[in-house]
Length: 172
Image (cartoon, rainbow, N blue to C red; front, side):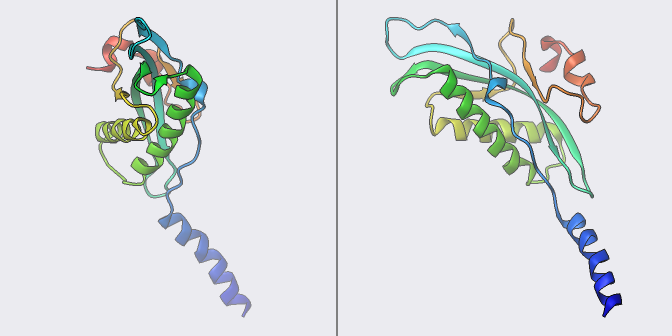
């Protein structure tokens, strides 16, 4: 009986490790720092604000660990047909959408980094648009802003990428 118990205790972690892909973490709302790029005119729907974030998406799978950097620009109206969009509401909505989109996309086990980022952008836009009509999530496009980076620390030893690249080279 002891031998069977020992065998089971040794096999269960191997089985779990082979099957599991762990997606953890959460981007804080403060990572989405919005900047107005088009002023609001006369209280009508309009105005535009943009947040730029370079996000590391990662999964800790024993068989296929992955870390992908994605540059994201979230643009949204300052006032839409529902009324004004506060900076705080936009930040919270974007952070929640980024977390959910990352989980969904990383579970798809896509092999190409560009495809992972594209799907992440599409999923984020779909999720945010449920609360904030008119949102656009793309690669970084608006010049003159300093993109935020998440995570800030060098947990995976990969921060040479966005730290050493300039905005003009991100979209090449």
